[in-house]
Figure 1 (tube, one colour):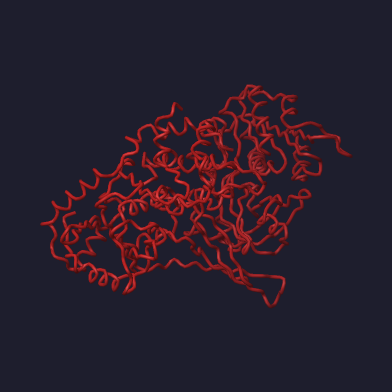
Figure 2: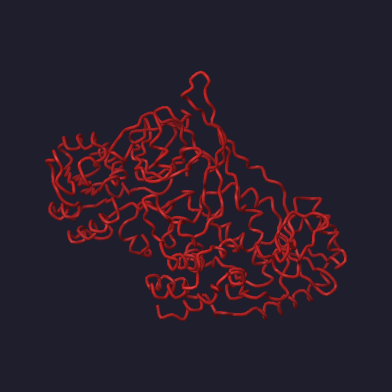
Length: 279
Length: 349
């Protein structure tokens, strides 16, 4: 927790400045802290999360998916699933929310310098990857090849369509998009993310893979990466758990002796193999 | 600590009454069949002869605690705009707990590492903890289910207490553990108790010998638990009787998990934290419907794992169980955590 407040449970008040409809059930919210001094001082690392409140309904955890290199606002993407996310989906521009952030650890972007970076995302799982992708694009010379493999069930379920358009147009990024099954108007790849990953077969040499998506996609992506000779140290992922306090106190998001809200959400596969299998 | 005092038996009530004038005072009070920590009031029947059914954890970590109030205020110039006002209350009264047991006091030490020392400081816990003086009654005989000596503690351990009180035939021998305890001794102006020290030590030693030992030592238990993590059969057998009622966690002086929820009426509301328990299915249920611990066997494994493996791994070998035995005494179906630990130690995992 940064020093922005001495009471870690007390959210900063923030205003929703823009709502973007990403997919039929995912919206992104751009928010600005109400206190301009705090907004100016706000600092986070790519991959860190925040607790977002709708007062009267409660809090839920979301990754800050805008990068720290673009601090005009903080962006959270929300898939409608429970009470808090449903309440967030009702919000309009100008409305007030609470934000407790930044929380948790982050992608080890410093040790990734000079390496080829492979992003493998599925559905809303592109959210944490987006932070790091934009961060790396804003520091492009620090990294070698950047490959992004992104898939969703249908073309309607692909998030961040504006980003995808921009990344597709860049010569220094290789973007591969796929959807699970044929869909009217889709001209990209068709197939599950792990299968497409095997097909494009990126080299593991001097590479780091960062993956996030639904558990089943992650499971088969890890197998595919292993077949491609990525070692456990070369694979990073972010975990999701039901979190409440966000500061390692409430005891809710543990896997063995690790707390996802504090020791995570970013883990290497090597770290994950060291903790009990309770995902 | 050098400073000690003595309270003759007949004077105990007047000493407690004097303490109640100095701070908010919690004492173990008989309520029907139960003994519960309640704010002191004249005429109550206090009970020091057996440990309270519930530890005094709620004095410092209330079962339901308001983190802050919120007020949604409509802007009359622009009716679509709603301002939010947040108000926290971090002002806590001076408090004294009298008559908890060493296991209960140690519970707060288990909390201290998580709530104060591990990184983020919990201001609500910190405020109450600092303002509370704990006067502990050492146990002169174990209660059914107790196993404090097996978890490296004992019926006269001072960790977590400010003042230790030992019952002797003629009265109570008091020994200060901390400066806070010493200050209480001074304020009460008690007679020097050093003449009773030896007698008190003897009583404490004999109590320690009487505590049952369901298992010998906890060495290797954290690793053994991890080794048994994927042994579904083992955990299903241990959890067969469990009815997921969560009583064990609510009675436990060392369980500290909580939930945070909002309550709202009209434009005003509160964000509240409430005790919650890893024995409940909803505890880890995610909004997506995924639940990493859908079965009671997985949940019991987490409870035992947290106390005897995960917490000790995080905090230099300290076991997050004080051996008070309440979860054993009051479990409606007699699940016995000390038996489970003994099974873990004996398992070929």
